[in-house]
Image 1 (cartoon, rainbow, N blue to C red):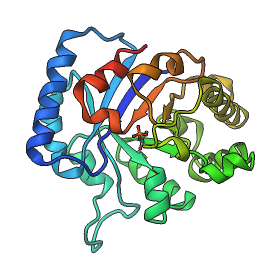
Image 2 (cartoon, rainbow, N blue to C red):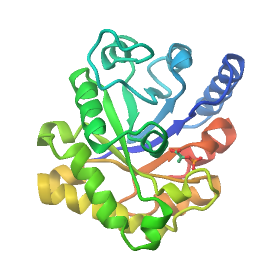
Image 3 (cartoon, rainbow, N blue to C red):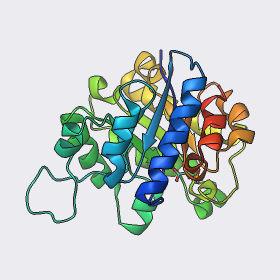
Length: 253
Ligand code: PEP
């Protein structure tokens, strides 16, 4: 059975003290609830706060993820962080191919594939983001765009490795805009992604892969999105920066 996952992507926000406060608030909130056994909470802070987040997480309340990783193994790549480094910090997840990295840092499907390989080689689960921009949706090209990203970033993997991937469908027009995809729009793409996985790896494998929705997800809309059969949780940006809002989504299943 695939997991339900709510992952918070803090992006480039918060000072050390603010991050400490947020983690503290989050822990107090998480201590009050009993989450279903099949649900996982993941927090993805900026690199400098990863160790602090791991100390709070304490192997029990949430898992820690990074927001980026190098496609290179090691060596003279100033400013980069390798998958081996993340593994040595006992990080379990890493976001790859986020639309902000695709748009501002030229992350291509080939680069996403290389980063996925690095992460898998170091026992981390990649959270791979795909999604169309507004013009592509308006032109009715969303399925074609998502297919290209899924195939280009992931279809070099074998069935054993594809099972370690989490996919996040994030329509770019919904990220940080307050505009959420309707449950019908999101479900259509999630079912489509699952059908692509089923065609390549078989239904059993496809049914085991968690596909998250991302894009202005908040406590008020999480329930109806998460009620869709192919939506297995959310990748949360803005609402992950406030413990109460994030918890409103964590408890939406
Ligand atoms: C994101 O950037 O992954 C995201 C989903 O952001 P937001 O929730 O702020 O739209």
